[in-house]
Length: 276
Image (cartoon, rainbow, N blue to C red; front, side, top):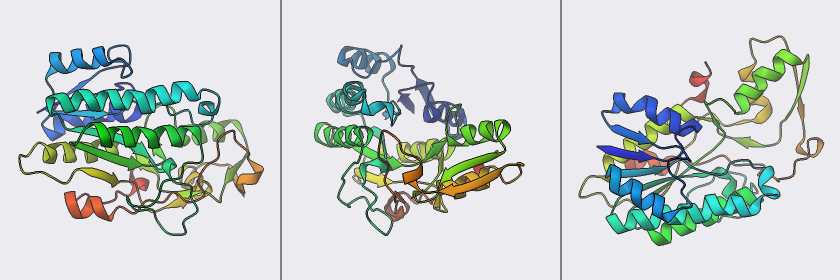
């Protein structure tokens, strides 16, 4: 099976390449320079050249705070680019697996979010990703939208930042009133490859949106405590109000992952096992 992957150098893109051999698939991963998803011609050329059985869109504008000032770029990539990919996939009847985010929710709910809960993004980033979801749904009937959260596993993420700061400081203040499910990029890659093997079957018809995140759910403070449990550093819990950011974050973005379990048999992974 040939799987074309966007954002070769991103966290999930790199993880997909590493997992390919183990899953017995051929992953063709392209960088932004090789495939700009905002260029329909470039997408068309890549599809014609590599003839993928499945396309995984791991490309996204993910600078949450910077997006508040660079909204045009965020929407161009997360919304318009996603739509262009979906349209080209639809023309060739290629299944599109599209990665989305917990930031499509406002965090007001007291219990984990299901796929059917109302979206109400609080930030430009969240809105651009939600609009991208809608465009994908409209443009390509053969789509899987995978909402995930708190991704770690590459060169730049919360885990890396915490470990770096722990070496530079004696004490760290970390927000304790935002809760979610940390998810390793390697687990997301495995999830996507398992789904890819199912969606190419002639009788597959469970298209739509799915939640997928690690468990147990924690606050950023609890996440930091686990990451740094063997480090000699003091970690202090603080409220969001004490750490203002340009983009507003949902207080609760814990995802209910029962649907992906019932349809694909994919269980929520234990993120603590991926902290290496």
